[in-house]
Length: 177
Image 1: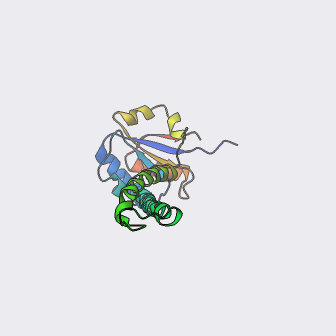
Image 2: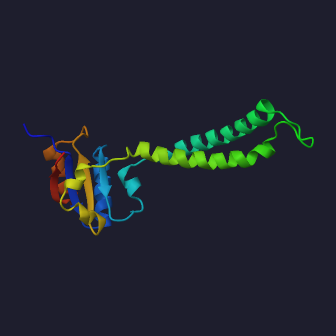
Image 3: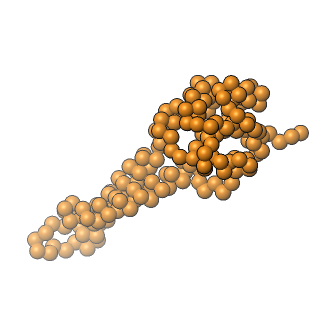
């Protein structure tokens, strides 16, 4: 019994062909597929039906955590752990805790953003089956690709290949897992 392939990859020669093909694949109901381009293509996310990233939520959570950590730390140190009145200042004032809170907000936001990106992109990924394709390096230079993965519920080797041919895909190849 042969191992199931990772999916199918099709080549497209220009941005307009890729955009048209991405819209057709999206409209066909595929969920596990991607476009590989040598440069960012404006509007490709919309053509693919990709929703907004969840990484900003990680960033917001990190920022709020950093701010609250800074305020709580200064309160704990000045008003609880070592209460000392100096020059008539109160035990705790947000004004004096702000610099520390500000810095921790930035630090925690940066760490949460990086962590969120790693989690959402399933990184580190040291290997991907698309890298076995012998012409993938052209995707960094002058060609565009659409990869439809075999784990997609709508994937059918013959039907998916037919769709890719119909929308203008060239050199449609089965990717090894």
